[in-house]
Length: 113
Image 1: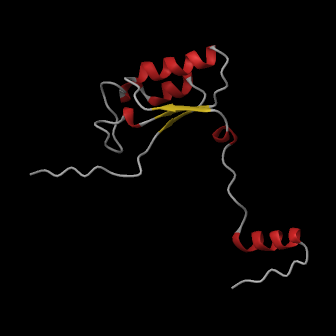
Image 2: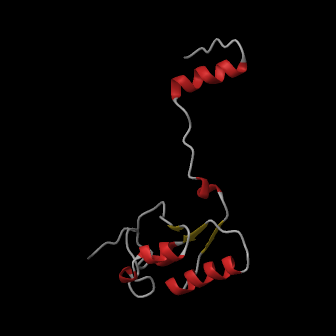
Image 3: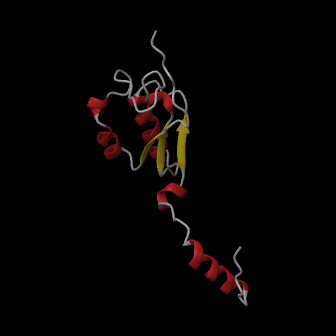
């Protein structure tokens, strides 16, 4: 158990932060306007949707690709036909200000018989 004597609320906060550390400040763009959706048929569609929003003057800081980019929705994979690695995601980064790939909070277990 910890006791923070203060005596003011501001000093209590400072004493608490001295014990646990300061909170992490996320990147500024991560707090901005984001678009994300499920169902992009390929990388070109994802880029076109993003560019169309920017051209329309819609504020946009980040584009998030849902699990569509994965090979059969398996983590740590990329669907070569629809989201080819050969097109390098760095090319996408160059065209879009920020681009994030969605990672599932589960891993598909594939059993081979």
